[in-house]
Image (cartoon, rainbow, N blue to C red; front, side, top):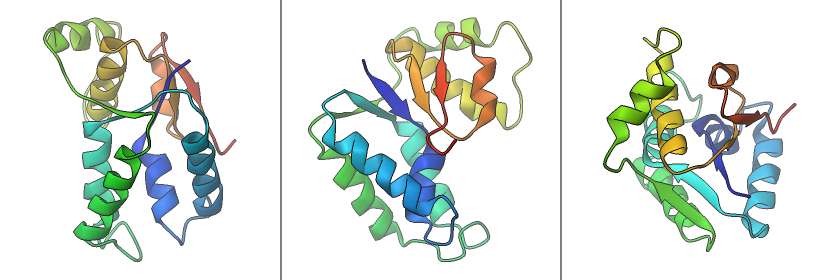
Length: 144
């Protein structure tokens, strides 16, 4: 069974001031030692870069070099795979967003969900409850 990890898990692992920091590190370590395919979408990586370097969001923002080093380290784990859009993405996006209005902060979530659907990834580890709106997705909070 494969799964994906959302940006908030990566962010908690990098934010030493977060109450979830230690648990996020432990969770990511457990992911790295289990052989299941672990997907990280490029929009997830980009959200991680945007937020973890932002001085108004992170008390101790990371440098771009630290961020890129973290992403490179993840991509070197043998069973980690990046996800990107392929032909037909817009149709999948329209399909998963057709049942309720998607706007504002839900747009990046829908983008990720469409990528997961396009690549048949049905499990997502995240602390973001908005993903529960997408019924095909098995949303698991690694901090619950």
